[in-house]
Length: 249
Image (cartoon, rainbow, N blue to C red; front, side):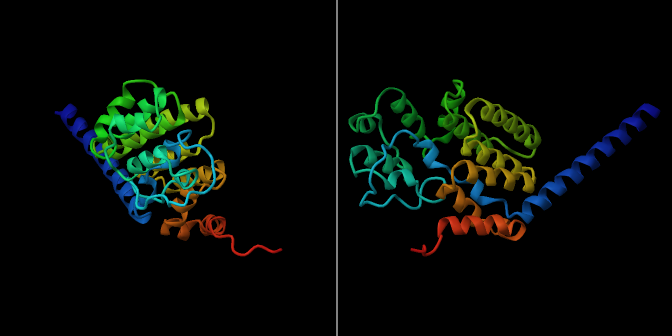
């Protein structure tokens, strides 16, 4: 009987601790409004190396884009050729067939990567399966794999396990690929799911810094009212970077 009583007390204590922890997670996530901008897809990272540098295009990039967020800056550069047209369709969430990419001049590793991305709109689980079938060779692959895991695999029963596993893998990725902003961005997403709001903002600030104030990350900050409330200096800095105002002659 004493063993049963001790077991019951231990179970009750563990349940209370977990309950209080989850209550705090809910409270912190509610305070931050869920950090919706951390669920955006960083298309500039996903399209890295696929769009050659060039002059601004007369055709503006699409908005909205699959996954939310601002349109990728990469598609506002370069001529409006077949490559850019195929990528525009992809970013807008259309299912682009392999022949479309091939005829646009993509081949080899670029074509394989684009075929993975083409599953994001109709079948994201298929894209995740492809990414999990091999070790990531680039920061973009690691970023997308962990983004999809956070978006589709996290639930009440595995919240802590998934989040800490993701943060560990992203930490290893930062050591391997260097301080790539998308990896900080994904780690901020993971922290936000556990209500680690301060850590999430710190990593988002790192993404802004290491991206050299890329528009995507600047807007991820300025579109978050919670950051405006708790880190007004960061929000103000990002607003100024987006719209620096008239310059002195």
